[in-house]
Length: 226
Ligand code: G3P
Image (cartoon, rainbow, N blue to C red; front, side):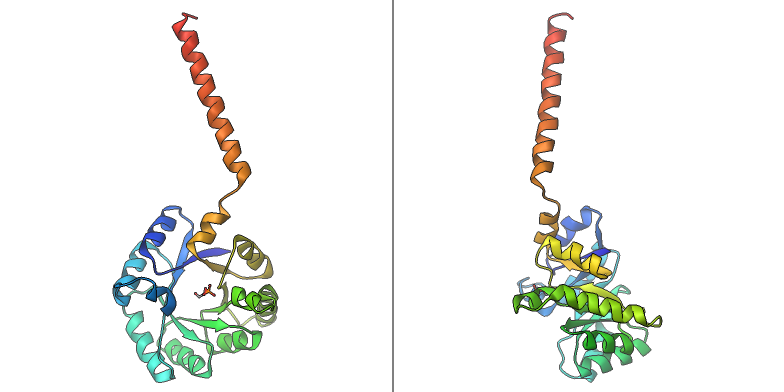
């Protein structure tokens, strides 16, 4: 299971990259809209310099011609750029056409296994099932990951990876891995929460207190001439 960061915020990417856990980054138009004043090309180029792995850049055209035009442009920014297109029939056509030019695609906004299967058959590099948004409407996001994994497993020609997206909490990451996802793309806060445990904090505090008490006792003994 690989972890990507789901953000266009450079400070978050720099921080998580320092932890040594990142295999890639996903952005989308909503995440870009949160970074006031940041240029899209500059942001993607900067991310590609920070993280050595796939960086998803999403198209905003509604037809295949526009998606292909944007995809060709974005892919020229860096060899790690992956073109994100929506799970629509226009998106499928864009995946097929970009694939013929050697450009890799992430088919996003996947909410059922048919969308994932067709994206894979069109040649998608990754598919992004949105598990949190399914959970939000009382559907089982994790069941979708399991279904896609089983369908992909059944056809040895499918090499498309499953990227669990719309991750809302740390259990989503582990459950996605167990359900067969290859990658989870996480908001920064989910990664931070995933590393937190009260027993780690209390255990660490106890170790440090014991160490300091030992040092103090040794200093006292040294001062007393023992
Ligand atoms: O990158 C797309 C996806 O992860 C969006 O998540 O939280 O907006 O449903 P969310």
